[in-house]
Length: 158
Image (tube, rainbow, N blue to C red; front, side, top):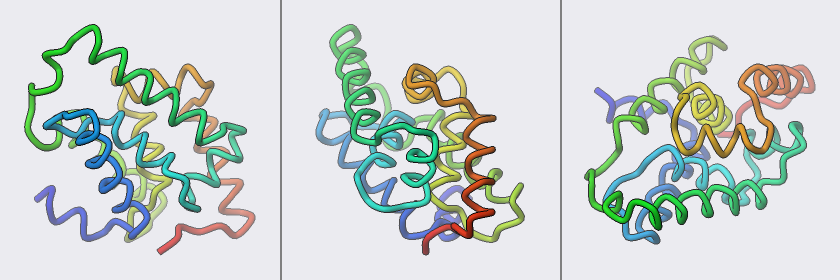
């Protein structure tokens, strides 16, 4: 069922997952967690999520550095984290579900990169949510800025 949900993701949202996989591999991790999705969001591509970060006055490159540092710190203090899971962690699966829910709340039949960002904010207690909180992004503020983008005519990219 989870696999079928990826069919409804825009190409930019799917690229977040590809970037996340590459990020996990670069850390020699066998799993993909929400913090890897966060690195995928900050990949530098022009997406609705990157527009939303700009609207929130958050530099994607600084956010990426913060996420990478958080992963490095976690691995340094818990080296056994590297091989605990295979594939998506339960938290990452939940982010996918929450992204679908975010799109559904907007009554959209697709899931964009911005929905993945909102889902990371909704999924409390993860390394990704901690990093987002540290840079000052709240779910409520992100939703308000997304609505502002929508009013300006910015819809999700394909």
